[in-house]
Amino acid sequence: DSGVTQTPKHLITATGQRVTLRCSPRSGDLSVYWYQQSLDQGLQFLIQYYNGEERAKGNILERFSAQQFPDLHSELNLSSLELGDSALYFCASSVVGAGSPLHFGNGTRLTVT
Amino acid sequence: DQQVKQNSPSLSVQEGRISILNCDYTNSMFDYFLWYKKYPAEGPTFLISISSIKDKNEDGRFTVFLNKSAKHLSLHIVPSQPGDSAVYFCESTGGTSYGKLTFGQGTILTVHP
Image (cartoon, rainbow over all chains, first blue to last red):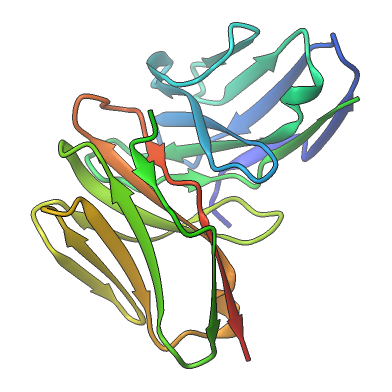
């Protein structure tokens, strides 16, 4: 058990809809990261938050947004969903420090029909 | 711009033999390299890391080698066990992309009994 909790585990929705994915980081971790893994693809970095503030951005679409709340949980909002957004979305957390490993949740599987 | 590459999508090994997983990177400013293992329906879990100031790090059956001149790292698993069958990702951090974590595409390792 990594200590990172992601909800929901599965989400099925229609094109054009909006969904929110939630992540609770490991206790004590201030950094939260979001990744997307599409079929047969690697882990694509989307965005990182540190203690409530955006720290780094990767290949995140403008239709996607995220935030980290004062209690350090994070939400990833996906809007105007397209079929191609179907993927596994992982959240990870880490402590501050060079080379600190990421601790991943078990992901949310999003299916857009 | 894929800064970290795992050129072998899959590797098949007999139980008890050595598994060697490879990763190439382009950014010489990376200062830490990490390996993760991922089972189906789970998030990746941290396996082992190495700092750029070292050329080898060992942890039980797992050893990571770093060749900075070739910008290449490898993960050796010996002896391989069927439970090692998983997808392995390498990750690099540091340099000018602080906070951005770059993952390879992953290598599927299958260890046959």
